[in-house]
Length: 81
Image (cartoon, rainbow, N blue to C red):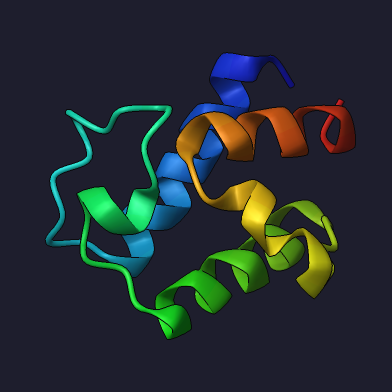
């Protein structure tokens, strides 16, 4: 996957979990929780969807790597290529 494909995959998962959120104006370097209404259960759902859809295991110690959209792409890119 390319970085753009990883970004799209993450956005697809977020849109499934939070369908009422507008993701068009998300800034890559700002915390996702500061930009859209995600609670801790939503975040865990994102992690579970990554595992289900892409077979990517994200250990709890790495959750902070997924804090921003850019962080998601940086963390997931080597795991999805």
